[in-house]
Length: 191
Image 1 (cartoon, rainbow, N blue to C red):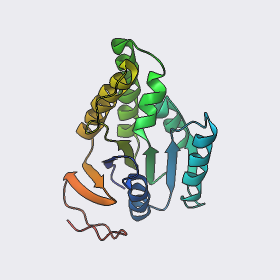
Image 2 (cartoon, one colour):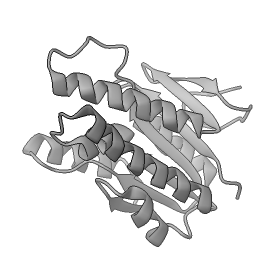
Image 3 (tube, rainbow, N blue to C red):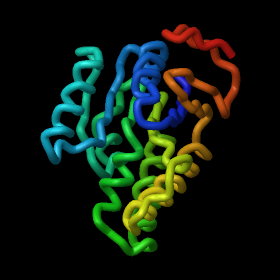
C-alpha cells in the first residue's frame, strides 16, 4: 500500500470525523484510530463514548493526547490506515495553559516534526482530522488567540505534508488539494 496523507478540515460538527471514517473504510481493512481527546470532564467523557460507538469494533483505538509519533511507531506497524482525530485537540494538549507564544509554538513544532517523520517511515495511509478556526471571531482572551494562531500554523504544516486536503462544509467535502481519486463514500464524492 502506498503511503498517502489525507488532511480533513472543517468547522465544529461539519462532518469531518464521519468523512474520515468512511474514507478509512475505503482505504483498508486494518484501521488504527488515534484519539487525542482526554476525558477531563463529564461532557467530554460523553463525547468520547459517542465517538467510540461510531467506529467499527474491528478497528484498534489508541488514546494518545501527546507524543503521537513515538507511540504510533511502536503500535501501528500492521495498520493499512491510521486516523488521527484530531489535530485540534493535540495542539490544545501540547499548549495546555502556556501563555508564552514562543514556548507553546516550540512544543507544537517538535510534536508535529516528530509526527511527520514517523508518518514518512510507516507504510500506511494517514487521515488527519482538524478544526478550521481561522474563520471565526477573534477570541477575546490571550490564550484563545494563541490557540487559534497555533492551530492555524499546525494546520498549514500538516496541509503542506499532505497529498490530499478536504474541507468539509455542512457534511459536504470539498477537495482543495490533491490528485484525482474516486472513493465510493456516502455522499457520492466524484472528482
